[in-house]
Length: 246
Ligand SMILES: NC(=O)c1ccc[n+]([C@@H]2O[C@H](COP(=O)([O-])OP(=O)(O)OC[C@H]3O[C@@H](n4cnc5c(N)ncnc54)[C@H](OP(=O)(O)O)[C@@H]3O)[C@@H](O)[C@H]2O)c1
Image (cartoon, rainbow, N blue to C red; front, side, top):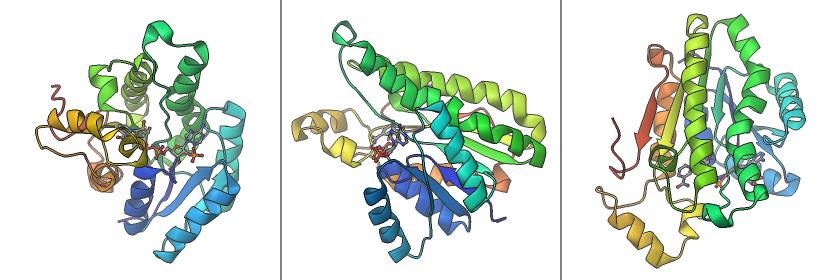
């Protein structure tokens, strides 16, 4: 394994933390962004206790100026980005006839526009170095739609459109671009859902349980290897069989 520098946006969250661990254990130098300094330092100390030294830079991925400054700070402090995981995301659920513009735009800005904001400042460097790995963390609900999530489903579906276009444009430069679409994973976000609602979700999953963050991280890590250099433009569903597109 060649050690690289990896940026995982939203690396302090449930799935992001698992991705940071996997990439660090593969020998990569791993970085993430933060918005709240005190929470970030507490998280960084927990990772350090596990033997993982994470490079941390301030940045709001929904804001183009902040995202660009974040990338430049990261390049200065941690090195140029070889591996980028666009993982930061939020939900603001509402049925569409009650949804306001703020709910729509926050979700589109944080999940989809962030892909532009963060990837644009790193893509030229990857092309110049002729090596790169970009992974979008989308969602099962971008593939199948979801009641109450027109904003989230639209943004997550858009992320895969971004993946397949970038995959075509950058294939000749040693850069692969793929999407991972998790189903319902046992993170704080999902565990906050009332138990009876969660039971209904689990009842729809053939494997009969929620996913684990490590199961998403494992797939992301696979896409970033040298051996995965012929895999580009895919959308990998990891959802316990909840939705089987083809
Ligand atoms: N959990 C699931 O079941 C599930 C299923 C399918 C897809 N996903 C996707 O997987 C990804 C990770 O989800 P998760 O469950 O790990 O969520 P999470 O625990 O809520 O973590 C989200 C992370 O994104 C960061 N973030 C949010 N908005 C940001 C912004 N504007 N700028 C920078 N960072 C920002 C958060 O940082 P702060 O602490 O600063 O807010 C946090 O580190 C998301 O894209 C989500 O849509 C999750």
